Length: 163
Image (cartoon, rainbow, N blue to C red):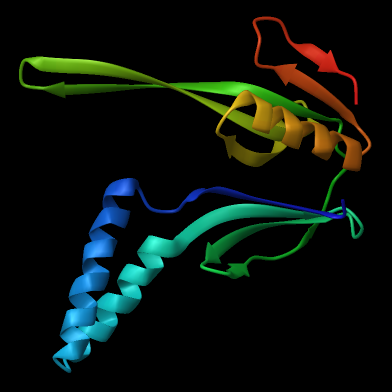
């Protein structure tokens, strides 16, 4: 494998994306009525709906690019890939509390993430993954192509995985 590409996440929250879908419909309708505001609304809504952040790695050129993607286009600057000590797969737990009047709730999110560790406190984030199998597969591929080790930090005790 000579390249690795992964969509990290959408740039805008889900609520804005849903509003943008409505904006696309309204923009098309306004364009049908020959209103110039329809074109502006349509372009802005398309940007919000289809923009995302991501990362690409080119193993043959030893470089990477953190990009802003819009549909099929990826905008970003290629940088030299630093010396990677190891690849780690870990669970990122985040807690969100919600309070409205007398009702409150707590939601805990467990996201699987991959980092390319450069130094103790320096890393390149590869992004979120849906499940452990997918994350471990991507981590394994990255470790092989970067000729480094893989640390599985999804359990209570971290474990080095043979590559």
